[in-house]
Image (tube, rainbow, N blue to C red):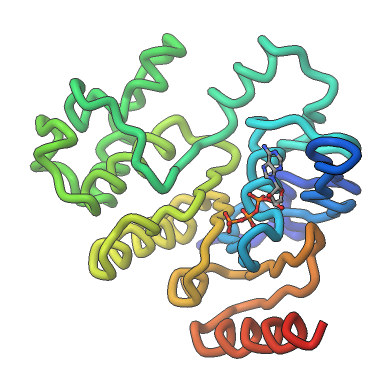
Length: 253
Ligand SMILES: Nc1ncnc2c1ncn2[C@@H]1O[C@H](COP(=O)(O)OP(=O)(O)OP(=O)(O)O)[C@@H](O)[C@H]1O
């Protein structure tokens, strides 16, 4: 029997997060005071037009970029209080990343790529968990292959397994299906969805694709550095309709 926790835990949150690039003539407000929570064990998609601040939000949340003002929390840890060494440790131990360009090491096998973060951290590998992750990504017979011997979808599944193997607090995925054909994209999204359902993983994914967003539990819509709307239990049709609405507003403006 499974018991639902009475109040869902927050895996990460931002409070009045502002990011300003440049100054004077080149000043750009990429994030204009964003407050948002990401509940543990949920899959959130972030959508919005080009330049709306999606990558900036993700990079600030994932401690890859600093904010101009406001706070970011991963679990209970507030990022601005950490020095570089502590930030590196937090990124390594608490955060998983999946990028559009799979970012695998070409000379390492799939297995070596997946265990690399643990090897670097000097952490031991939980064999049962590793086998579980590999079975879920469906890579058991490809572990000895190098990235160039794998399809794009398989490479991205290696990257997902690498993100998952250290059991991070949260995984940030930046257009994980952007370089994949639709069948491989579906494989990767199905896997991300399964890791949320079966392992209680928390995932935040930036995407332009309504079909990809439909795999999430909640879609946040960004425009001009602000969260302008959100949708629970999205379908591709509902997301597309909502995006058309924003385009219409944009064209009138
Ligand atoms: N390093 C930078 N220096 C100056 N301006 C930047 C920098 N990075 C982003 N910006 C600006 O900040 C704004 C938000 O950019 P961001 O990359 O977060 O948007 P996005 O929604 O992820 O866009 P896309 O969908 O095209 O990837 C844009 O106006 C962009 O030009």
